[in-house]
Length: 316
Length: 277
Image (cartoon, rainbow over all chains, first blue to last red; front, side, top):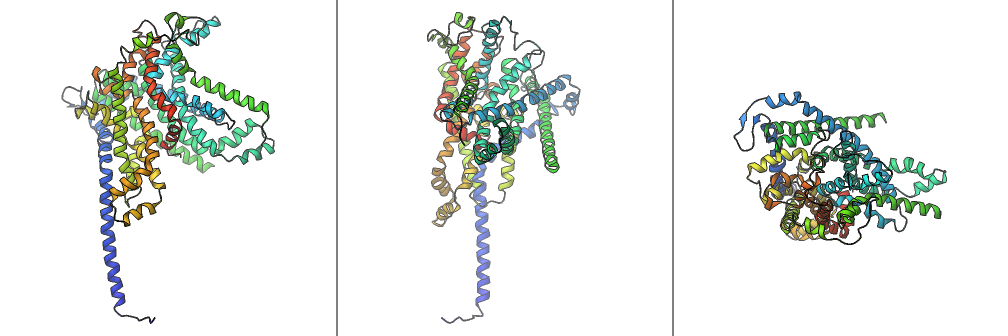
């Protein structure tokens, strides 16, 4: 075959390249349009029920509005009230307390239970379902159930205490006791997710490192903390974030159901306080300011958390 | 590695004890729901009822009416369906169609996962109220059905793993994007769709806060709202506290059945929903 150098070939090739690039960009534009079309229903719904509420909360913070009247502009009244509101500061304290008392214990207990439940011995897999069981119970069912366990008379816990001649307290209404009692319920209901995530992580840790450790004479307990624990670190980080979000949010539901925020506001978190302002006092303007304040706080907490983690990495 | 017999027994015992402690409250709930009043009050506490006393269930069905059960079912199913319809095409677009804005759109969609739902409750209520959704099925379903973060994340993770040759082959054969989505990727996604549906159904079935604020009409009461008055320690509306437990057991029944049937999926779904899998 004779290769002929055709002087027309180059411009022709360029021409073809140009048309194909025009075609490709037109195709890409069509692809993008299709992508937007596929995204549209989801994004529109998401915008209406996630983005608009966030913006609406900002706007409403500057208005007085009781749901069934017309909003009236009040400027910075609610924002000013916010920082002088003793109830707000008290409930913020309760929120922080629930997070502190909940996140770390749930993560550690969840880790230990996952280690127990992830045993590869025959027959233990069937027991695993017991560890996950609390997740089927809704907040309302969990509350009915634990309120019953905590009952002064006829509640299991006090019945057991009575066996030893101890008169049990009124768990959910005695000041000083209601908070820990509620935290136990929150932890119980948060544990399954933590256990599931840790089991998945533990199963990915290669078996042979344990064999090596055993050869070096490391006991089971030692292996647990120097082999398993460091190997599931990335999961721990995710769980800590997840539990932080859980313990910020869940006390509202459980306290609303079990203690109505009492005794003496001891279980009223910031979320529950805002809930009461919104749905009991119908003060939607101030409630919006409180909701916004929560978003600001959680944003700050996340930025701080990221900063701390980045610092930790640098120090390591 | 050899494991001694005594270690095996020890390990098995520990696992059993921990599991039983975790599940004890639920066992207690079911067991006591069949007890008579004297049995409930007995000291030392009884672990098992003397017989199956269905009277508590009869009393409980006065507030957990068939209507309440139907409402819960409609709302949960509606939420699952809506989330599927909204999240699946979005996830497809974000993984298979060449699209410049994928990163940005994903960022926006996933951001709410870091905000507790209770924080957005009030603003979302205001919007739903303004849209006239108070006391309606649409109000119960649409705002929750629109929270598609987890769904998009989960489905996108799956679509990304599908070989792109599959999509390209269909495209070269002249199939439009919708065709590809509908007849190539959706059939393959069925297991993931099942996982997601089970997890979302249980979550939706267990919703309390949103139905409590958006539907005050007794005709729209769902199970958890019906149970709420009994959950407060002070308000014992019924002669035996076991009535509340009977109601709670009834309310948990559908979720429990799903949980037992689909335990493996559920576990996988939880792990995938956090982006860890």
